[in-house]
Length: 272
Image (cartoon, rainbow, N blue to C red):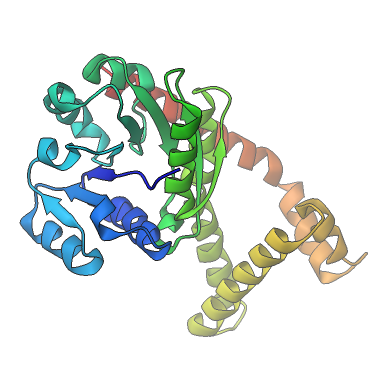
C-alpha cells in the first residue's frame, strides 16, 4: 500500500502529536498537510515538522486520501458544513473529536467513509491508547490507514459498535486523570507520613511508572501481579484491605459509569 496523503483540519496539540509520530515513522513531510486559523500555530507546525500549512481548511484537504478532523467538538458542525462541498467520496474522514457521532458527521458532510476514534493525552508522548470505530463505508485499506495513523502515537483497538466509544472514553480517554488523582493522593499521604513533598512525589511517580511497566510487560494479569506483591499479614495487605473495605472497586465502577454516561450525553448535545 502506498503512503496515504494526510490532511489535518486543526493543528492543535493532538494533531501535532500525530504529525510528529508520523514523521518519526519516516512519513515524508510532503505527504502531510494541516490547516489552522492561527498564524502562530501554523508557523510552529511548519518549523517543527516541515509540513505545508494553510489557513483554509478546503485548501488543506485538496488531494488528501485521509482527512483528520482535529478541531474542538464545539466548532465541528460549522467546520464540517464549510468543508462539505470540498470533501470527495474517496476520502477517509477520521474524527478525533470527543462526542461527535458518525451520524452527526454524515449529516454535515454527507455519506462518507468515517472512522471515529477516541485517543487520550499520553498520545502527546506517543504512549497513547485509542479506540476506533469504522462505519460501513470504510474499506479494509482505509481501516489500515486509520490504524497506522493512530498507531503513530501508541496502541489502537477496533470497536464492534460505536456505543463502545463511551466506554473507551470512560476507561482510557478520561483514564489518565484517574491516575493523576491517585498520584496526588499518594504524594499528599506520603508527606503527612513525614516525607518531604519532593521525596513523596519522586517515590510515587517512579512507583507508578514501574508498576505500569511491570503490568505491560508481564504475561499475567494485574490481579495476579497484585497477589504476588501482597504478603499475608504484611504492609501491602493492610493497605489493600483498607481500600477494599471502603468499596474501592465499586467506587471505580461508579466513576467509570458516570464518565460513560456523560460521554453519551455530550454526544447527544453536540450532534444537534
